[in-house]
Length: 304
Image (cartoon, rainbow, N blue to C red; front, side):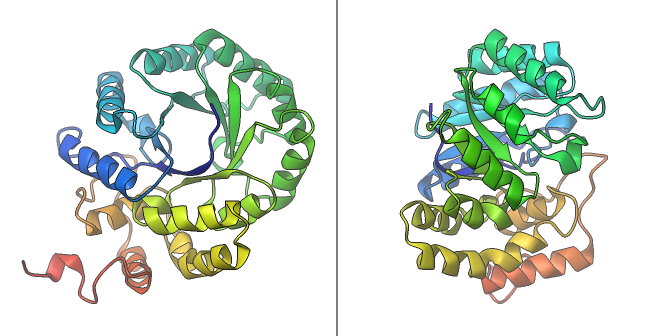
């Protein structure tokens, strides 16, 4: 399975007592209607550490059923316990997931050899297409290009979500992968680097921004993939302030607020995350309006 284009790292809508399945369903439908190529459920943006095992199973089953084969559904199943990652990945596969997203183990800080063995073991045991997820700013460990190349030798490891923040690392990964595994997808894990990654030879983005701007994000990535660089650059520059404001504070705090402004869910997060500050909200509102995502009057003040 090849991943190309825009995959939305979906927020998980919550109520005060559980999962807001109505909101999640409407968000999934809208994302697909607006043209994203795949969905990522229960990743970082989906607050995966804050859901129970029962909720996880229910959310995966719901998302797969709601997507109904219209786009692939990827489930976040990673962690810092290899056996648990295997169980979570197998469970996602059994519930109909098309692929799993497995983050580098956090806190225990494995070596590159440990990372290689972890991912290889999970992939071979789970027997489901796997996307590696490198986000050292959150995990404290960086999956280096040479290790990615080694892991590309495992047949069902099919892609990398690269969120190191280093364009030099992206370029080195792409350069070393091309002769070894040309069908391997490298996806940006940072919206503000997606334009650059695709123009360097990458295949797309796993996006936070597309929660609230799925069509514009998808248009930008498709333009870049098609070689329409000027068009892609214009979209990148228009969206850039919003990309930045969505990360003024810890993700997914700002984007959960932004999604609530579109009416898909409440601005409800689970501890230890809390709602973003008034300063952050004001900046997100400003940037959403400038991108045409809100009217001149904030939604909470609009009538009818």
